[in-house]
Length: 92
Image 1 (tube, rainbow, N blue to C red):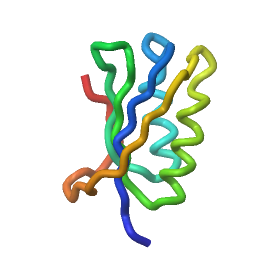
Image 2 (cartoon, rainbow, N blue to C red):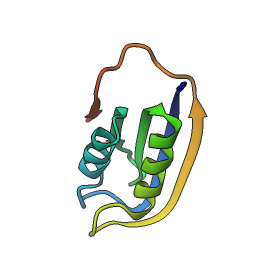
Image 3 (cartoon, rainbow, N blue to C red):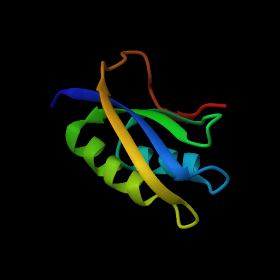
Image 4 (cartoon, helix red, strand yellow):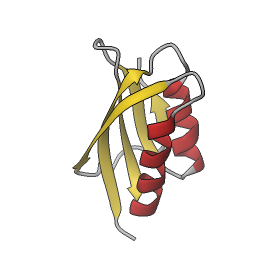
């Protein structure tokens, strides 16, 4: 299966509620690599890479988020895969 990569920006009440850690745990469970970080505009930005079915499953989970989050919008864009990542991590 071909590897794909997505860039995602999640808006709403997604900072201060464990959203980045939710992204990390969910991505790891799905076998994805990439990163997540908080943005200055109160959104969370992430990139994830793996097989298409896992990326679709991640997108569905991102719409829900952790219990304290309130997701208003999930913007997804397909980008070029990166060859040098080995895990999903949180960026600061």
